Structure formats: C-alpha cells, structure tokens
Length: 294
Image (tube, rainbow, N blue to C red; front, side, top):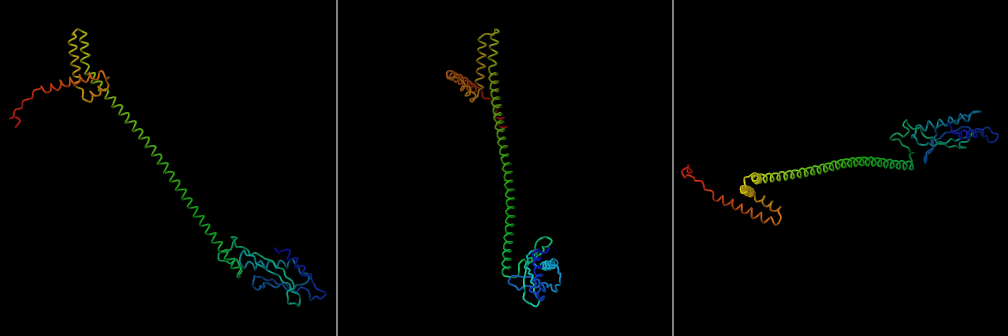
C-alpha cells in the first residue's frame, strides 16, 4: 500500500500554483531509482495531469511502479526511489520526495544462491565481502559444533563401553574369589575328613591290638588265672608295639607326659629289639644249585 506521506506530498504539489499564471503549475512527476555514487535511473514519467487528478490514485500508481521495479532487482534488499516534480516550462526539478521499497523475497523467504544483495559500488563490495566472511565463519562454527558433538557422543559411548568392561571384570574377580573360597573350604573339609579317617584307623588299630588284652582280662575273671591273662596281655602289647611304625611311635611319644615318655620309649625299644633278633634267628631257606641253574 502507498505511503501516506507520499499522498500528502502529491496533494501539496498538485495544489501549489505560484502566482496567477497557470503555466506555473506542476506539469509532471518523474520516478527515479537511485544508487549511491551512480546516476539516478528514470523509471516512469507521469505527465499530462488534468484538473481534479486524485493524489491517492497517483501515489498508488507511483508506489506500484516502484514495487514492480524492486521485484526485478536484488531480492530482499531495500531499493531507494525518488519522485521529482517539474513545473511547466522549467526543466529543472522543483521538488522531490524519496522513499525505499524492499524487494519481495522468494518462496523460501530468503535470497537465491548467487544473487547479489549489494549495489555495484565499493561500499556494496565491502558489504558483500563482510557477509561472505561471516557466512564462512558461521559454516566453520557449524562444522566445529558438529564435529565436537560427534566426538562427544563417541567419547560417551567409549565411557559406557569401558564401564561395562570394568563391571564385567569386577564380576569375574568376585566370582573368582568365591570359587577360591569354596575351593579352600573343600580342601579344609577334605583335610579334616582325612585326619578323621586317619584317627579312626589308628583307633581301630589300637583297639585290635588291645583286644587280646581285654579278652585275657575277661577270661581271667572267669577262671583262667592271672598268669594266663598277664601272658596274653604281654603278647598283645608286644604285637601292638611291634606293629607301630616309627612315625606312629613318635606320635604316641609326643602325646605322653614326661614321666611316661621314657618308659614308653624303653618298652618300645625292647620289643623292637626282640623283633629284630627274631628276624635274625629265622633259618635261611635252602636252595638247590641245580634248580637255580635251570
């Protein structure tokens, strides 16, 4: 829509008649497109104004002409226009009114790629260079942000993987400790059962060795006599002491008190000596040389 100030200016220009000479009235209006440091470009001439011309319609026509011209230039960039008024017989401009119109943008609401947004002047070139540098900086910032975001995501993934690995390793170590504890418990239980079985065997051996003595005591009480019981008791004790190994004898000696330890050692040595003498007295079996040669 036309600017109200343009309509007011046209109304004043049309009604302004200098003196009584009708030749001094406004004869025409000319619309120009202006560019800094460049000559103005005439767009349209509105002449032959008749009496009773409507300033609103004239202003609307000038404004639409400016919009149509701005649409053919750089999109989205303000274009400067000026309306000059001329009086009859005077080639010089009498008055002017300037305004600006922004070129209509495309369907996307932005400039098309490759389109210029500045006039072809030094100032326009400097502005274009500045915007170009700003666009490059923005592009680099976007690339940096994208790269930083990707690296941050990868770092987070690596941290998650490391945490999962550490959790698995911790679980494996805990399981290993539990297995080692269970193994130690099993070995301890096995050692206890082995010791228990060994003590049982020792007790059974001692019981079997002492059985004749007990039997002699029972038989002695029933009338077989004390001599027979003592003989059987001595025989049972001798068999028991002769059957003891050196390790078993040392174990029994270690469990005795000091006053009984020497007596047991003397008793064990005497029976061990008797056993060795008996072995020496055994006859050597005869072997026929002829049979040995065969």
